[in-house]
Length: 181
Image 1: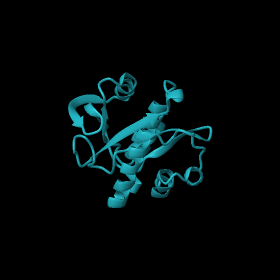
Image 2 (image 1 turned 180 degrees about the vertical axis):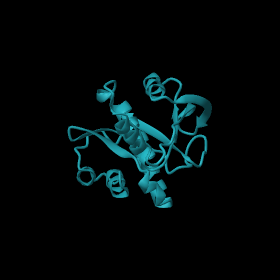
Image 3 (image 1 turned 120 degrees about the vertical axis):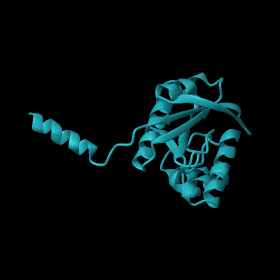
C-alpha cells in the first residue's frame, strides 16, 4: 500500500486505488475501521519516509483483495518500544477467515523482516480475539505483557525472537554435508 494507493482510497477513487495496487478491491473494503487505519498509515508515511519501506500490504487471493497485513512502522515502533523489533498486524475479510490466509500473511511478514535483518517481532491482540491468538501462538510468539491501546482497548503483547543466521551458515552446512558423502 503506497501513499498514492492510500490517498486514492481515502479520496473515494476506488478504481484508481485498484489500478495502483493491481488488484480488484471489494465494494466494502473501505469500512470505518479501514478508513481510520489507512488514514493513520498515510499520516505515518508523510511524517516519516522510513514508514514507506515498512508499509502495509494488500493480501490478495486470485486477484482480489481479501485483507491487509503489515508492520506498525519501522523498527522501534512497537508495543514494547524495542528499537530493534518490528510489530506485525493483519486483517482478513470475514468471508475468507479460518482458511489460513492470516497465518500465511503473518509468516510472510516475518520472512520479509528477517531478510532486512530483523529477528525480534512483536504482536498485540485483544484477549477476546481467539483466532488471532491462535495464529500468534502457532508462530511461536510468547506473551510478555499487556497494554492499553487508545482505539482497541486492552491488548495482550506477544514477542518472538529468532536466531539470526550467520552469514554463510547455509553454505558452510552444505559444504560439511558434501564432505561427508
